[in-house]
Image 1 (cartoon, rainbow, N blue to C red):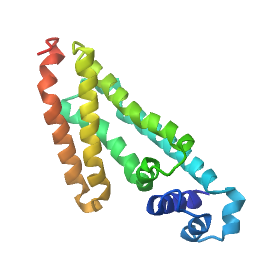
Image 2 (image 1 turned 180 degrees about the horizontal axis):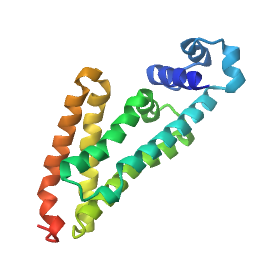
Image 3 (image 1 turned 45 degrees about the vertical axis):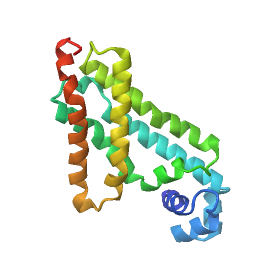
Length: 193
């Protein structure tokens, strides 16, 4: 079944949901269409299973990445602990972003995943609130949103870069986020400059 889901992720990402066929997915998996139908009734069932797998893996990455208990680590270490699990889940699931970000997948399949992805900003805000307890709520929410966008802007480059060069881009992402967050560091002592 994992083989079929992996194949479906590839086909959906390459062709889009609307143009993908169960025959193409079976071919990608190296099985007959009959074998595919033993496990999944149609491509929607495959997409539902992929959505559930992605939601589960994304939720696990959130747990690792956004622990308010790590908020007092040195800023570069904190940022690294937040970005690495999120980078890893995207590296392990390269087709999911293309699939669930496309406009041709039925909304009932994408809505829960989009909600989980949007929750990232809230989770970032939780960690920042623990690190900068005196920061006004509007500043906290804006900072979390911008930090999330910085991450998203470089994520595509990180995921598509050959493994031999990937660490360079992860370091750049870390530096960009540390550079953005550093002016807030005086807020750690209670002043909200």
